[in-house]
Image (tube, rainbow, N blue to C red; front, side, top):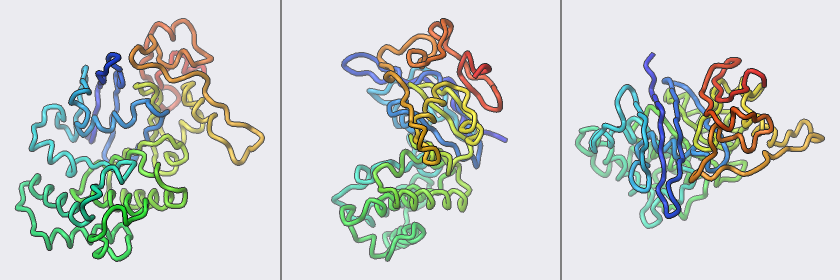
Length: 328
């Protein structure tokens, strides 16, 4: 089976006043059609930058591509022109962002924004844009599928009139307008309370199953990843350190950073065991450590870790980038 998404040796930096930050360093990732994959890691590890790279949203200044390739459904994303990119964004790949108020224009109604997106997708696919009435009907149908009350009336409301959960459902509806094959959800429940988080996550899971979508879910919440995703990719400081079946990785992590992440999560079933934070700080990507980027914080590090960058290799049913993975 041909991969839906294939990323090879992807390296990307951001230029700033203090220098060049190496935010992604040699990312290799293959996603097959129908997979549900979770990407986890600390804030600043490059999860969102990687997601935006897939849709060509970070390759303009201050972003700078240092090397590598991204292919979607066999096509070179970096070679796409404006028309091909327009079809990719929405028809091939759609994104749900974490803060709906940032991505919904406060001065336009929900209906006006959805109609604009619907007609833009019509043009990108080479069709004649449908009229306003037809576009509004499609928008109302989409809002109804999100289980929003009175979807036709919702079209005339403005973002500030909706709750956070409602706004996030509007963004999900907009992401599905182009019937994408890959849905990227970037921290989709961060700004929501716990009860609404569960509802939104349940809705995403149902939509993935209903539309046979491939899901890439980005989160720092290991519980969310474990509930929705069969595969987990662990990132640290712009690198992938562990990749495998979620149940396997969570039950028996082989990278010291993955073990640190799990140890930092409180265990409600074992209240006597206190959560243990990972010592130290994430590295400065303006001048990242040599060798393994995690070695300054790793209790198991040896001299080789400071010198040689580990490569991903198969260990105990998953891929791990650690010189000592066989001995973990």
